[in-house]
Image (cartoon, rainbow, N blue to C red; front, side, top):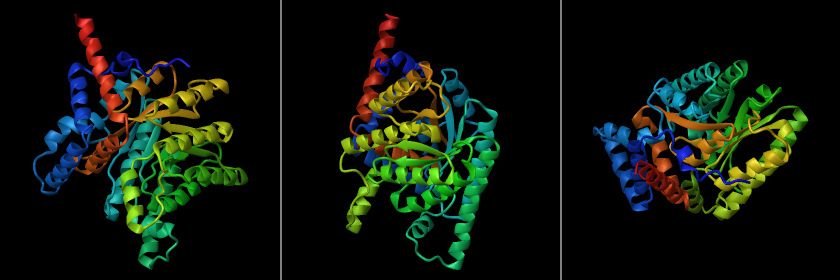
Length: 391
């Protein structure tokens, strides 16, 4: 298959020279693990001490990785990307909250994004995080099957109700809905909730999508078991496939508890696991839909090749490629130019509330071998290409 992901002119066609320089500077910083650790500590301190750093954050890392502070803020970016055929997923990236009022606020914001998706072709999916709707400690307790107090049971009932309101609304408005995966110790409870939503609302086609983090060695078996239940009970499966974004936290926790890590023993094993999940879902694409959330070029080529070999059209609505805003533009824009379905995750929210997301992005880029150097090489190539054109 023709290699298309080196075309930097297409990849960065929407970036001005100033934006290109800012991106190069950011990834240079992210490439240094000590700088990321120091920057993270300083930023967390400044936020907690209520120091006036939001302007600096907004002008650098926030504007590169986020669409804005509100859903309306994002529309300029949404419309701009869609001129190149790249769609958006508005991601209210506020997480780790603890209060019922905050969970209700996240519910209402997610319902807003469902409305946005229904009204705009450029926004084909809505999305939410389970911990946006309930406490992580409660998910963990439910997942472990520990008995709940009466108060906790009432709290869990409210979490279930929030899930159901969002999924029912998405079904009624015919908007596909992605539900993110998070830490392994809360995921069992979230998986059970999402499966129940699939059972209720995926009776005619995939509307509700769960997320599989394929750096977990148990996820392929989970997918196969879910598929068996779906066939028996007559519902469709929507699944976002990602490698995962909590690796260091997962390994550290497993080590502290003296448990086997849920993470594959190597990057190669993770890549193999991801590609096996693609194989399995493509084999059963008649009852499934795939959102391939990947910054990996080889996995992207693999999916393209499988689509071609199975005679599946590039714009088949059951198959989407997805990347994060501010990363892997060489994949997103070149795929879109070729006619594939592509959507960028576009995070938004108040600067302070989005900081956990931004810190995770920086840590992920630092820990994933090759990701940051690839971004830097592409940015450098495009800067040099533009200079040559001007000569």
